Length: 322
Ligand code: ADP
Ligand code: TRP
Image (tube, rainbow, N blue to C red; front, side, top):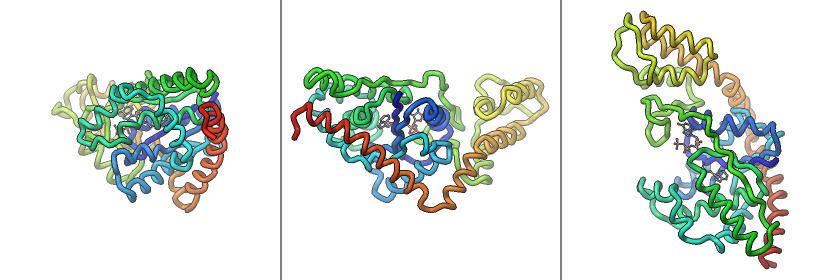
C-alpha cells in the first residue's frame, strides 16, 4: 500500500495541525510505503515571497522530522525537487473542465479572503491531482477540507484512463481522518493561523507558559466555587496531552471547586510541555547537525524522482508525447 500526502509550508506548526494531520500521517509510515512532501509549489499560490517560502519550507521539514517523520521509513522531499509534477499537471489540465475547478471551495475561500485570483490558485487542484497520481498512490490521508480535491483527482484520473487506456493512472482513495475532533484554539474557536489563536508545537518555554496563562479563555468563576466542565477550553486541550486518569482528575477538581484556573493552566502547560519533550529534543539534535535536513530532502528527492519517472514515462507514451 502506498500512502502519500503533502503538507503546505505556511508558518509555524500548531497543535491543531499536529493532532489533525501530522500524527496520523506519521503513524502510517509503519503501515506501508509512505511518500510525504512539503507542498512548496502550492504555497506559492498565495505569494509568500522568496525568503519566507524558503524559510517556511526548511522549518516545516525540520518540525516534521522532529515530530517523528522517519526518512528511513518514508520518502520525504520538497515538491519542487520533482519538477516533473508540472508536466503531469499539464496533461491533466487538458482533460480538466473549467467548471470542475470553478466549483472548488478552496479557490472560492481564498478569493473571499482577499487573495488575488491568479491562475495558479485556480489550477491548484490539478497540481494536487498530479502530486498524487505521479507516484501511483493508493491512499491519501488528508483533512476534511481536502476531500473535494481528492474527488477532482479521481475524476481526472478517470478521464485520462477513459481517453488513453485503463492502466494509465492508478485510482487513489482518500483517507479522511473523521475521528479527529477539531482542536479548539486558545479562544475556543477552531485553532487556526488565520484566527491568531494557536498553540505552537515548538517554541520557547517561558513564552509558551505565558501564552497559555494569558490567552486560554476562562470564565469568571471564583476560586472556591465549582467550575463548569462543559465547553471548558482548558479541559479540551488538557485531554490531548494527559492520560485518561489525569484528565478525570482535572474534571473532578473542576466539579469540587477550591482550585483556581491559574493552577489548571499550569497543569495544562506541564502536560503539553512533557508531551512534546522527545520531539523538542529531536529538534535540538537536528539543529545541532547543520546539513541534516538538506541531506534528508536530497535523498528523498532522488527516490521520489525515480518513482515519478516511471509513471511519467507511462503517461507520456499513453498520451502520445515523444
Ligand atoms: P490553518 O487553519 O492554521 O491555516 P492548515 O489549513 O494549514 O491550518 O492545516 C493543515 C491541516 O492541519 C489541515 O488539513 C487539518 O487536517 C489540520 N488542522 C488544522 N487546524 C486544525 C484544527 N484546529 N483541528 C484539527 N485539525 C486541524
Ligand atoms: N492541498 C493540501 C493542503 O493544503 C496540500 C497538498 C498538496 C496535498 N498536494 C497534496 C495533500 C497531495 C495531499 C496530497 O493541505
